[in-house]
Image 1 (cartoon, rainbow, N blue to C red):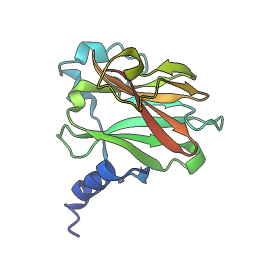
Image 2 (cartoon, rainbow, N blue to C red):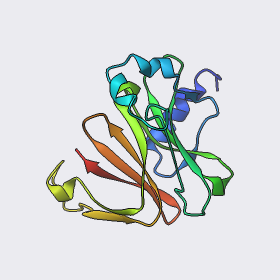
Image 3 (cartoon, rainbow, N blue to C red):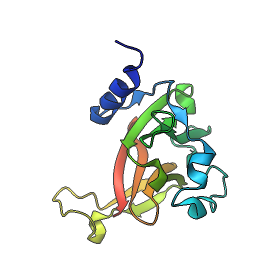
Image 4 (cartoon, rainbow, N blue to C red):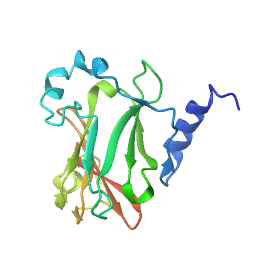
Length: 168
């Protein structure tokens, strides 16, 4: 396969794959100047970690060690992003949890252990008979959010990451 087509092929695989996969080493860190002048620049300045809501740190696998979640770009100058998690218990190997468009609108942060109601349990989003009402997390999770809008929670359960919508 042409090495220039590989990142696009991997991205398609990640989007349709239901299990966690190892991220490409070609994924790019989000340059601070890309977000410094975007539509959510003032909101990003509120991030006390200094990453502009592009990095989250926690113990996502419950092993007592630090794990990392990061928003990464698929291509330089592009707006497609991947939410990537690196767990210490897996030697820092990266897993892609979600792909999306418009990095300018997105952010992540750490969600502490606790009980969280889903969006559908509060009447938001499409009505579904299989609505998960709440999640009880014993370890940290990651929130992928659209500024001033939706938020999805990713949490590790039985060796794989689950996703639940918290706000719509």
